[in-house]
Length: 541
Image 1: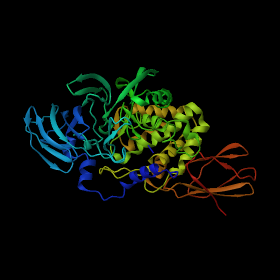
Image 2: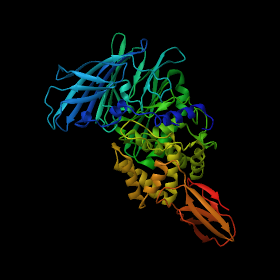
Image 3: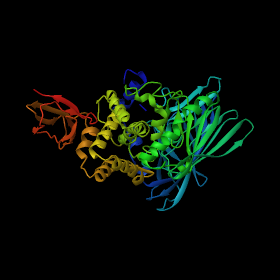
């Protein structure tokens, strides 16, 4: 979701980078670590029930959490952020005592927790949740009104954590197998969430919308959207059969949405080609208009790009190519494969989400507009790269790395595609990732190992270079009487990535290392260095 002198892009990148600069606290560890009070139980199911009162900016509700005991213990950690308050916690209708340490709450269980048992706890809570000031980057509730003065409400919480608005096991390593979400809202409004709508129950002054998610879902992917929505939809004949595609937009925006959202099935066709079947056929695909830019909530992609191509009408690549598609439709939907299907275990590995998804913009262009346009776009986005801090963050403290995870990461993957020299093989690798790690939480090591194994190349030095340092390889060269001398500088140990050049329009490969090498080009002409490789070129005297 991410300079070209665009204020919002600068703000986004700086907000992501800022996390690396802070001093970590006990709360960071409680949020980012698989603590002993988390490790012994495995999540199975959430039943989240929330009543939203927009006039008061107040919510109340409950979460029933079902789990399997992995090891015996009597203390369980759940998370809920102030100013929301826990009113009561119970198991088998017996009230339980708990102690609180900031956002973490430690429950003393009375019932014996035997290995293999399936138990549940019920948490009642209420309060005035944190209001998002700059959604979706700071997180919380967005309490807005549409042009007709009607309430327009939405949640977003990546990074900050889902516990900013509902109680849960707020660590990415453990996902529920399925989830029920019930939202009670004023009668004149509609509530949209993840999965499929099962029923709507009408009360005197309110309505309750019951949604159900049949697939595993990460906590930050759960969302609530409330507004004066109208619905339209279509069916997409995809790789796993018929996929329902539903759209919920503000009443006055129906015509604009019907035109702009024609890009949604185009997206689905391109991404199923490159990444494999949409991962959540059972839950359908939907896009929901919200009062902020947008977010990748699973099977409930939120949209606020004002029905225009580019990123709020701007081209992030500076090439003109970025205006061929609606950034939010393509980018946020790409997260269904990389974020919602394949999910990081620790936010330090957020590049797994953002690098692949930023690269998906390129692949969408490749599918519909050709490889040349796609390459022009991804190369253009290099102007946004800051190389300030490494892409990978600090582990176990809920810390993400540099915002360069977007376009530096995308250019790393684009470079890898060149090294493979076989687009069909590259496509099979991308599809294989989504099959091998289907509905799983993963680490960087797993992704690195898979790519090295499937390409048949040891990519460890390449990943160390681009993910763990801020150095971009510099290819230094000298040309004299048709002989080119060359080497790499600014590289990690073992980095020896080949580079493609063109001599008199003929393709040739160089194999640089940190040591000088020489090669007779046969002609005394300056070669053309292939700019699809994310390196710097430096002529030496």
